[in-house]
Amino acid sequence: MILPIFPLPVYLLPNGITQLRIFEQRYLNMVKNSQNTQGFVIVHTLRDGQKSKYKTNAKTRLSEWGSWVDIVDFDSGEDGMLLITVRCKSLVNIADVHQQEDKLNLATILPKPHWQAEVENERCLLLKTQLERLFDSHIALQKLYPSPDFDSDNWVCARWLELLPIEFSDKQHFSQDNSFVEAVDFLTTIFVSETSS
Image 1 (cartoon, helix red, strand yellow):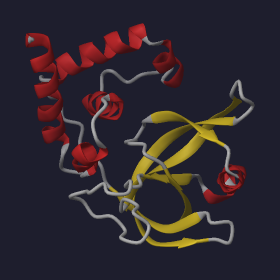
Image 2 (cartoon, helix red, strand yellow; image 1 turned 60 degrees about the vertical axis):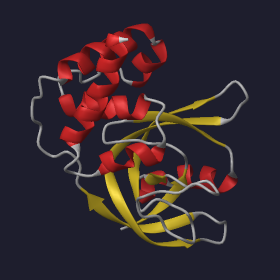
Image 3 (cartoon, one colour; image 1 turned 90 degrees about the vertical axis):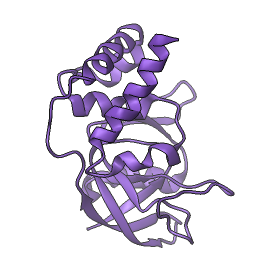
Image 4 (spheres, helix red, strand yellow; image 1 turned 90 degrees about the horizontal axis):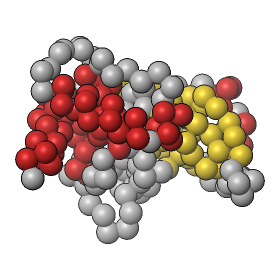
């Protein structure tokens, strides 16, 4: 399948939701056609001078995986610009990146499995409690996620990885299918050190 690519410094895992501001004509066209194209893929772009220990396309500086999203809502900002709310339905590997005349990137996408099995992990209780507190105090998160899935350890860990201000290169590993336990270790270390300091 060939889908449009939206290069953005956004880290979004399955069931993650975010709001995007759209103003360039090529991306306005992409949004207009999104029902025909079954959504689009958000792909992280490395900044000049930025390095990654994971694969990127040498020519485009795009990560080799992305977040395949559907548009779930439209709005307009105070400045009149289009705001769209998107939800990640799955991760995908991208290949054969090429450009249309309007400079919109397209790529062939292939499914990328992510944290398939839901395994309860006692260490996620702290992460769940802290995430519930964060949601209670942030109306913006409540609006983005009207039905949060706090009972899913996968969902809780994925939301923390998206929300924490950590370099993309440091959390890119957690897009791997077998990285759930490492993600729990990583997040638990952060929160245990926070609560003990």
